[in-house]
Length: 312
Image 1 (tube, helix red, strand yellow):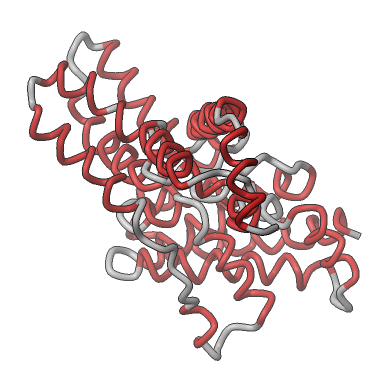
Image 2 (cartoon, rainbow, N blue to C red):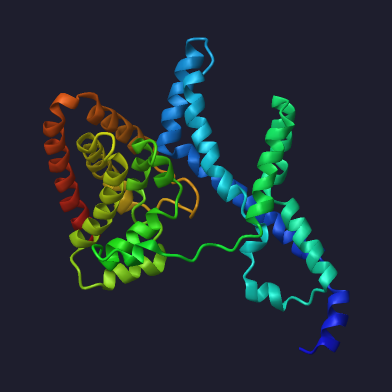
């Protein structure tokens, strides 16, 4: 299309349909954060708050955990709404320079991190805090997404395990688990959720036994978990991970729980409650940690055998 034809088309193109579609996309994107309600870490925090309210006191003990959740959610909330539009399609739209500048300004205004801090500043009476939060989308909207892939240079991992690690690192749970290992247990219920239909079809075509596919996913989960709990209590943390995988095996194999990238995973509340109890038991008696590890490993092996049969 020549420039002579592009200018008349740009002058006749209305931004209202584009802005309406962009607003719907932002609204759906905000709704996707509701997955945190069934996350094990959120359930644990809700139990702390419930216990405090039942005792008639303020839930002060839950404040640090809520602050961690909000901190990690700042980054996906600061994303550019226009980034959801493919660059090729956006470049082909017959829009003039002024229209594109207006679209960029409105896209920035649609960013939740630009208007969510306002009621927070009014509530807390801290305008400087709101200005600091507003600066996040202003800075990140001008940055290009990172293209580096550090796992590609780790020779110890096979491609199947490397792919599972990439999937785990594309949700927010591992970054929260860097501080609290319990946060990673929900992902054990969603081992196949990020594969998608094409990934599931590809895994069935691989010349591998089902137990090896499950083992690759479990190995990626345990490797990341062990790295996170190594400075704290590796034996109890590994026991917690094995029990979380064993309990989460049924929903992971039988269901496809919805998981979006750069969101917290969402599991089944019943299995999440069992994972929380098992995780607390793994860290409760440090004196018997080797016995707990042996029991957890046995239960995990049984779940691996059962899961392989269900995958056949």
